[in-house]
Length: 416
Image (tube, rainbow, N blue to C red):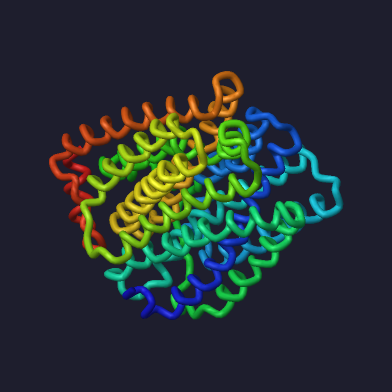
């Protein structure tokens, strides 16, 4: 728990932890409402696509701007914008005027906000930690907090949706952003001044891309994250279909399924928090193999309680891959390029999910959600095999936490 020594990080964890629960209320309510209004797996995939699609398009230029701007001010601006977006969802839902068009358009707005928020928030994390040795612990604790919200949020949302409707989920989410805004304003960041980068934004973007290409471990890890986000990350968009058509349930069943994935993700985050060091590349391989196997295993789910263990594994493995990739990037990348590289991390994760959700929604409307998830799982197993062989060719797969310096980067680049 070494990262708790840092006041700014403690403030961030409290504020962000409150908001994350609200975010999952909105995710649950959006998915359930989209399926309730149409009963279509394809429309569900389209809404999930809209909730993520603009992020990979805007994230690269956002990463360049984040490296130029004060990161705390960027995060503050994105949280205010997200508050307004959630409030708009609440107004439409509570007044009974919500349509699929509203869900899709406001999803596009949130995705555009995420394009700036994600690289700014992840790179700002380093500014909150005075001692770089505590950074991996901060990343693990942050992941634990996010996944605790992922566990609590759907359970609360299921009760709220069944009792009073989706509108109150959106309203509570909007109010929860006030906690993040307050925590950001209370922080003391004495050196939070942006570095003035010379040259045009386009040249800086090219520099960030060239940097990633020169470090084979980062290049391969981001490529794998993009693939598994499209194949495995999009499974959450299909859960309303599984809950109703395959398991014969309603919002409570969906809450159990989403909560199961949250339990797995939280367990994985706690594992990273309480253990000291990892071979992060090997951890990624095992995580993606586990994700693929869990999605294939869902084919056997004839009841909610058979599906739950598989979703626990899927949620945990996806979280392990994301956190391990994040740690490799945070502890390896030159701080001057961190915003740009984290924007490429956002492209990999958020770029894969909308494509996967759209394609899996279309396929699920023809062959069923369970069969679609099995196919995605088989492809995840193939991706894990590719990454395993790729890192073996680099000569070394280990990226020690909080001990990677510029010399390590140079050696990694020469290995590629």
